[in-house]
Image (cartoon, rainbow, N blue to C red; front, side, top):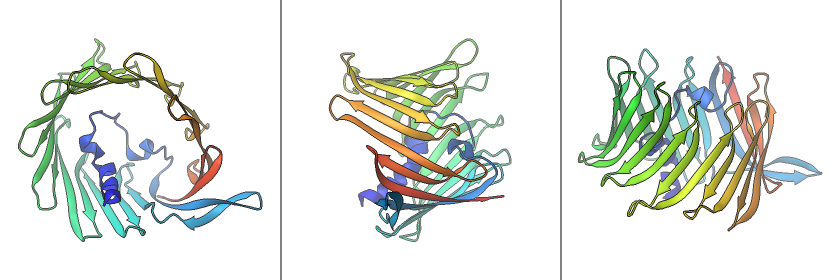
Length: 306
């Protein structure tokens, strides 16, 4: 089923994405504060009654999520339960003594079997040197390998299929101060897939995607950030340089996204906005979603702390 693979793909992004992420723990990635042990989210329809926005029926086609974290802020278990499609996935992560992830398992409890397993290996300097993906019976599906310069910065990443054939290659570029300035991704035949430019803080400020068959520009994105390094604007340009779409973002003082606007030549202007309730640790425990100012969804999040 289509929806089954959506759940798996969200987790497989570690292997299939070409873009390297900043090193941070799982709590900071989700803007969670304090010593969070676990949280659970449930989604409800948003309905208006007596002039107030209230919870309606549970949105059973959206998964109920439960995440568990260790005391270092890294995720050890993630559960997805979808009653509507009778699906249940559980992900388990293991770490070494320095909190580098060494194994990640994805279980399909609906079929009572292991679906995928990731294995991560490091060198004596604790730099990750490869990442392998195996299927339920232990067959290698894909593998990534990494190379570093003498400063410990990643300079090359290669992704291979099960036969050892190259899928794509990423080259990372640095300035004289060893600050990453860009990356270039190439397909197996050497044609350019995309290029990225970074600012002095490591934020992506420009991305150009190419047509693989002739390396002509397919689209370009220009991104801007606020002083807290939150993305506040993203503009999409066509190959002729004309602006195709503009996305703008707003945040509250706690760093959570409160509004996003999409101005498109093709689809017009649309907006999404979010209203939060917070606990004493400044983590949100209720999130109301609006689309073009119409309430659509309420997400409740129950957080447990150490």
